[in-house]
Amino acid sequence: MSVSASEPTPAPLLAEQHPPVALTIAGSDSGGGAGIQADLRTFAFQRVHGTSALTCVTAQNTLGVSRVDALPPEAVAAQIEAVVQDIGVQGIKTGMLLNAEIVLEVARQVERWALRPLVVDPVMVSRTGAKLLADEAIQAIREQLIPLAQVLTPNRYEAQILTGLELQSLADMQTAAQQIHALGCGAVLVKGGGMPGELQGVDVWFDGERLEVLKTERIPTRHTHGTGCTLSAAIAAQMAWGRDPLAATVAAKAYVTEALRHPLAIGSGQGPVGHFYPLLSGIGKPVP
Image (cartoon, rainbow, N blue to C red; front, side, top):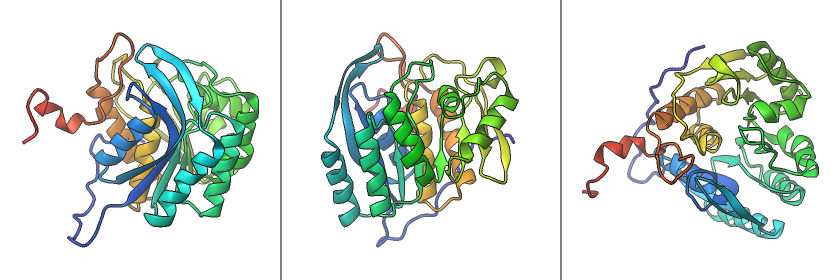
C-alpha cells in the first residue's frame, strides 16, 4: 500500500466550535526536538489543541541526553486529571514513561477516565538500538498499557523485545506485527526506520484483519530526531478528528515524510524533523 504525501484537511469550524483536544503523556526534551515539545507542535500542525502531562524532565540537545529526572506518579496523575476534568480530550498518546510506577499510574488513569482513542509509542529502545527502560517498566507496558491501546507504534528493536524475533526482512516485520497484536492492542504499526536498506521508511500495519505494508518516500537526512514522537502524536491528532486508525496512520506518515524533507540542521549533532514545514517558506521574515 503506497501512502500519498498529501494530508486531508479537516472541515472548517463554526464560530462557536473549537478544534479537537489531544493529550500527550510523555517526557520533556530541553532541545525541543522530541517528547512533549514535538508532540505539541505536531498537534498544532494537525489543527488540534494540545494538552500535556509530563512524566520526566530531560537535559538534552542534538548530541544526546545528559540527565533525566522523573516526576512522581502522583504528579503525572494530577496533570491528567486536571486536563480531563475541565477540558476533555478526543485523542491521547503516550511517549516516554520512564519507570514501572509511572506506567502503572498512566494505565490506571487511562482506565479511570476511559481515555480513547489511545496511541502508545512504547519508547523502550531508541531507533539505534539503545535500551531506554528497565525490564520491569517494559513488562508493565506489555501487560498493563498495550492492551489499552487502539494503536501501538513499536520500532524495529521494540518489536524484537515484544516478540523475541530478530527482524531482518519484511516477512519478519509482518510476523512481528501479528504476534504483537496478540498482546491485546487494537492495531500495531511496526516501524521500519531502523530496518536495513530499502526497508527504511516501510512500516507494517496489522489490526487483526488487515495486514498492510505502508510505504512512503525515503528521505535521505541524518536530522531525524523526534520522528517516532511525531508520528504517534500525528496519529492521535488525526484520530481526535474522528479518522479511523488506518486512515489516521496514513495521514500521519504523510506529515512525517514532509517533516523529514524539511529538517532543522541545528546544533552540532542530530537535528529534529521540521514540524512546522508549512511555515518554512517564511523563515527569516517576521510573522505578519
